[in-house]
Every structure is written in structure tokens, then in C-alpha cells.
Length: 182
Image 1 (cartoon, helix red, strand yellow):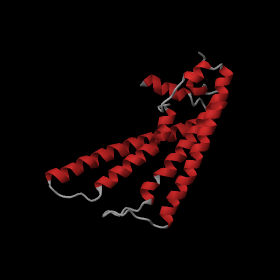
Image 2 (tube, one colour):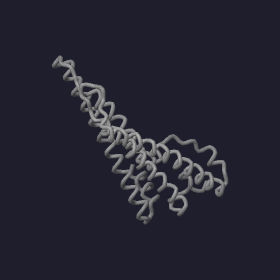
Image 3 (cartoon, rainbow, N blue to C red):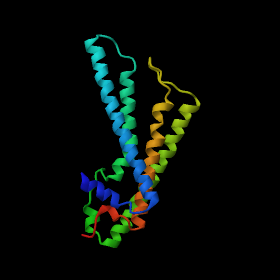
Image 4 (tube, rainbow, N blue to C red):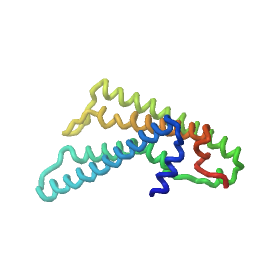
């Protein structure tokens, strides 16, 4: 574990932007983990209320669903920072160093463009729910802008981490695809 954190730290160098984005991504990871813990605790409370107290639940199921979705979205930048997403390194490994560099620039640029579109529409959807004060059709009636806030926050932080990864490759702080010369 210590080796992994030092490897991640070496990808930021002394660049203030890269270190700031890394800190934000780490904070997002901690928030995501806290949401998962809260969802588990609420699930345990829901089981106790249903099966021990023999009462109905009102808000627990909906809260657990929203927390799980928010944890996934808010956790995106942390997973990207750790390179925890599924990777297939066959093509980058078979390419020469220069071609690997340009392929990395292309894939990061395309990823940034796709996540920017998701951010735009996620923000638009969140803003619509906020502006119209939409509520869920359940007994709890939660204001939907609260759980939907995970869309622009998660995709915004993910976009920022992707931009930081691109900057790190361009500035030669990080190797393309994290592959040192092989």
C-alpha cells in the first residue's frame, strides 16, 4: 500500500495544480467511502426496523439507492487517480514510446470530451430539478436536486482528474498509461 501511495505521489511532482487535483480526488474518495459506510449502516438499521421491530420503513431504501449512486459518481476521480479502472495494456505495450505518447494524448482527450458532455447534461438535469423543486414520488418525498447533485460534482471532479492526468503526461511528470520504458 505504501508503494502505491508513493507511486501516486510521484505522478504529481512539485506541480501545484496536479497536487491540488490529487488532494481533491483523495477527498472525493474519502467522501465516497463514507457514503458507502452510511448506506451499509442505513441498510442494517432498515433490517432491524423491519424484522426485529416489525415496522415499515419509509426513507431507508431510497436513501441507500441514492447513496450508492452518489458514492459511485463521487468516487470516479479517486479511482482514476489510482488507475483503478479496467485497463488493457496490450496495445500501449506493443507501441513504440512516441506512438504510446500520442495514443495516450488521444485517449485522454477523447475521455475528457466525453466526460465534459456528461458533465454538461448532468449539470443541466441537476439544475432543472433544483429550479423546479422536483421531489421524489415516495412517502419520503426527498427534493431530487440533493441526490442529483452527485452528477455535476462527480463528473466535474472526474473531468478535473482527467485534465490533470493529461497535464502530467504533457509535462512529462507521468509516463503515458503509467507505463515506464519497457
